[in-house]
Length: 113
Length: 119
Image (cartoon, each protein chain N blue to C red):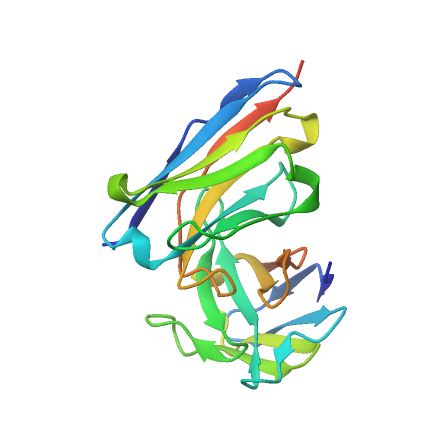
């Protein structure tokens, strides 16, 4: 199985500051036939299902604020929240859908400082 | 509006069986692959099983192979997860999620249903 490792496990950021979450996969999740990275990011709030933020590593889902951005390729990926808002407090998960079984990172808890 | 509503959760003894259902609305179920993802208490997300839009292809994680069966009834807008020989480690909230095909991101999730396996 592909192991997805997120860092850090948690972070506290002041409102308006940048939050950066990293995700590393144990093998590449890039499909060289279409040059797509099969990597998504989700936001999970207590009592709610995960919400898709980013797919193909860097494509923002419709309706997601543009302060959320994704980058990376191959095995190393980053989710950036450019200016943290109170409503962004949540756990964030990366997800590879390239190889079955699909796997998720362990989650990164983002809090307000 | 897309909605996915899971049901069927509850308390079971080890070795028991349970069937989860996921009723879809707001989209044509047959056009989408469906996946069950679970989250054990205090833990992260774990992919469990997936089924293609027409039901021809199914996939399972190793730990549930031979015990769980995913199926779908597109005419009734429902996806199922039959869980047999339940173990304590199957305790989790089970979410159904939709994607265009099985190797794709999940663009909608249900609220989940809790399965507890305990003696």
